[in-house]
Length: 301
Ligand SMILES: Nc1ncnc2c1ncn2[C@@H]1O[C@H](COP(=O)(O)OP(=O)(O)OP(=O)(O)O)[C@@H](O)[C@H]1O
Ligand SMILES: [Mg+2]
Image (cartoon, rainbow, N blue to C red; front, side, top):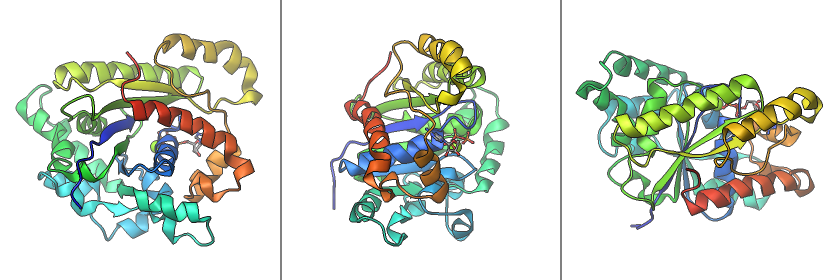
């Protein structure tokens, strides 16, 4: 069916690993789908974590085209060849809601060999036409109407400020106007390294907007995640205020605590809504707060 949908594009990125990028992408996709939106999740990380969390493990993906083949081909629209549905509808004994969510989420999956695509980008002089061509391969693959079926495109990125991240940032900012512009969501946990990784990512986003001529490339917001009350001393006294100060005006959503159901459903490759309501009520509400901001579009300076 033809559609005039405008697809808003976001990525999760931080130069630090383990801050919750992939977790956030999956939980936000779930929350957006629960509100009736159609979502395409792009896995831009050779670790393939969101692919697995949406039900497609590495073994199953060996026989299928993934983002690796899509970027290698780099033809307008060719990303469509690798898109597949979220596999939550293959899970047994789930609440009906889970099957409905799965209908609204698709995935552009990744395998470990996406790492090989670093090569073409890394060999070129920064600022050259070849470097630009290499960086824009994913944007080209997603062009030509691939995103017309979706309300949101969410891209997971590796903990790197290198070429694969550049390619993902370029793809989410290949938009014409505010209706499609989202931006980069930077998760962190309150500690020194994740905060400095977030600052480096924010700087890369600013530099990318300028150097790559992508005016809609911007930081959409910073999410504080994995706050651990058992580490209250250093986190609450030192790094939570440091994070709040460093990203004043850019923070979105609540402070997410380290919570067992979030880790458990990620590990199982299930949606939060696979769990009893009493167990996940607060989490659903909190991810919903981020989604409300994403639905509105522009959020941070
Ligand atoms: N709020 C949370 N509560 C509990 N566990 C969490 C929370 N957020 C993330 N985690 C857990 O922390 C770990 C790291 O999360 P995740 O894989 O999403 O981080 P990442 O930034 O994508 O990592 P990488 O840089 O390796 O891609 C996972 O085991 C995940 O389940
Ligand atoms: Mg990840």
